[in-house]
Length: 400
Ligand SMILES: Cc1ncc(COP(=O)(O)O)c(C=O)c1O
Image (tube, rainbow, N blue to C red; front, side):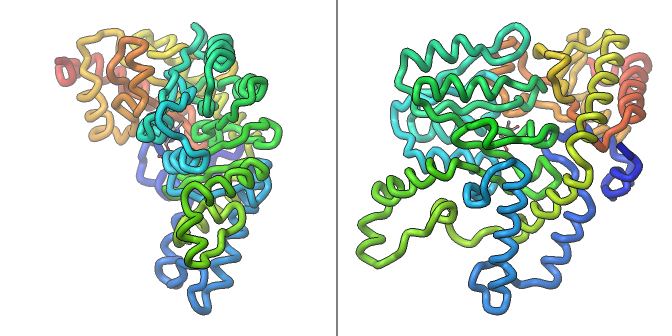
């Protein structure tokens, strides 16, 4: 891929930032940044029905649904807009009516986003474990689903702390074999690999717009017939009396699951981000990110001072690396602060909302370097050089 061209589209990279925190949120290309600035400057339009702007707004919403549909191979009327991926999962819990003591299958590799919506409704969460190679244990999944009444299986295609691509198609097959609906969280997958909603056959899926170069915004997708089914249930269980009494019509799918005025600015930003993603192309993204993944791992192996915390499957992996130092006296919080303040290297230093995974491996926090297609081998060299410099010359600074 023409990396120079890609990087020229991100003014944020001009500031000599070494941005390795893409799993948290990705950089926005200039076309998205300019759109957000222009929209605030030139349009009052935020809402459907907003005097002259009404058609404009309606068209933008429809266009974004179509772009999402094209991006992930679903139908436009299967796309529900939400505030973020956590909100998408919360909306799902609301749509399918999760209640106390329902069983929901999640896993130790999940982000908290996939616990909160179920837990707050009193559901029992079954935490699926991983095999030694870091992939989810499908035999354990089948065993649980076979022997328990399960409301939904909700699992990530990729975790936010280890980049193994999970066998999500097989997960869907297992769920369906036992009549259980499945939601796949593509938040960490969609920035790196194309999603095929229809091909995957999951009942629901979700992702974050801000991880593909857009603003904080989210998408929930549901199979049309499944959404139609819940539309009635949702209406009867939640709204019927009041709606019937007051003559309020029930909207069609998908807008019956969207409440209030939609965030026009975020919707348009997502359209811009998807169009830009189309220019870059998933083949190019994969090609560049595979180079970065292999390069990081070869430097890591040569360096010998770091310990990647969670198992990785090198062949089926996207570039998310979580580590600490083999010398456990090195305080990674201090190290992270120095890397940021002195060298403009942006990592994540925390448990990345993935506490069950950390607990499972007896760890508390880690440094995470996560890459995108606009990162380069030179940036990885810079990172390892600074680490070496810090370790050899200034060890005192970040020891406990
Ligand atoms: C796999 C996964 N799911 C969900 C989320 C939550 O995303 P959002 O911030 O859009 O709610 C994240 C955030 O990092 C994530 O990595």
